[in-house]
Image: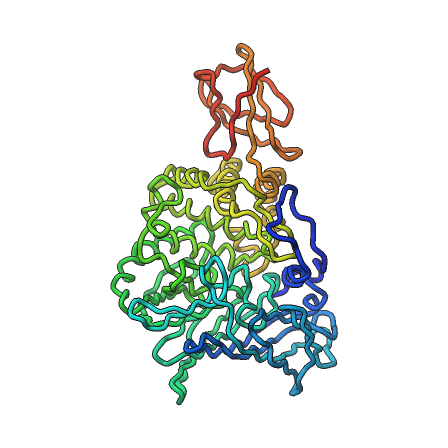
Length: 547
């Protein structure tokens, strides 16, 4: 659904956050991919009708996609995206073939006239080829063509960041989601395809292939649309949640069925109960909740979460918090399912704001730990993840060029949210803020600014300097101090203008809250052992200075 394209019409690279270091020079192709070009701004996708023939024999695909859209402001050309080496064969509208000019992956289609404001129009794009192969999915995007342990075909897609146009023609921006979508995948009949939403029909063909037609009745970001094809078993359960009965469907490889039944019983229902408590109802009751075993580690494919953690706890058996706490649950089940709220229900317009997806999903790990083991364990988990923070470049990336910021969006972002919880100082109010974000922006695309503004408004706190510090710089606030007898001097260093976050500290007579600014302030206090200790629930550094 197009939310604000007319308001953010751009065709230039916008300024990056201060201190952001580019990984590679930005190009015209980056701008065409990442910005709302004039050829994207005038039309709003309402429905994708995707049909793809997946051919493992030669690692090729062929298909078509019907694109239904609403005309916002009539124009002559629209931009469809399809990445090489795939070939766009033709585009048809109103029974005639349309002229297409290509500029790399961007294909500019001369639409049939007239295109009247408010009208619904449909065009169909036909294409074929061998899509990009993902050798290290999900970190590099594309198709995964592999085999299970019995040597049978096992196929998957994972294209976050790279974009859905790596395997089908689409308006490849997160800012415009269809209201619904059909995903019809044709595969050899020996294997089963599991895609998003609900299975509407299965159609066998005389050539030994079968089409599995899946329907998504809610908005979906296009990188979440997925192929998962293999020798799957099907385990069906239900969960009684806040919005009624939710269907749970697990698709492990057939020889892992018993293992999957045991393993998923550990976390799925407790996780749903925890996240519904903190975030509100699961966003896709109509489309169901699925876990699908994949040959890659995992991905938040909406209503068909990709799972490849080999039925073990932690992250491939490791604890990312370095505390041992993370070995009590399956990281991929929890983290990827958290994206159903953060990333799928709320999707950012621009990948530069991916912190909204990943920071909240990382923070959800903390909350799930708290649901299982208590508040102290949850805090210990998120504090432990600070060891993974690099503080290399800012969390927010440059806008309009399909470029993420730092990988610190996970651990640094999660600790930012944990810190804000302390500033709010009321867990129920904080819970209502999280639930309010989900309800207010339900099934919408958002900007990072939308999220920041909402949290500040609902908490009554001016959090703009806090967000700016943790998201747009590569520095952690430093609480500097010095002592002169019983006089304690404190200030914030390495901070953005107007940063004045209160901080609890331990003094000789107990804990108290200080209110430092960037200027030195004094108070009368004795420090235990002459050392100032800050509350570790706040993600800051403490440094003694002389003079």
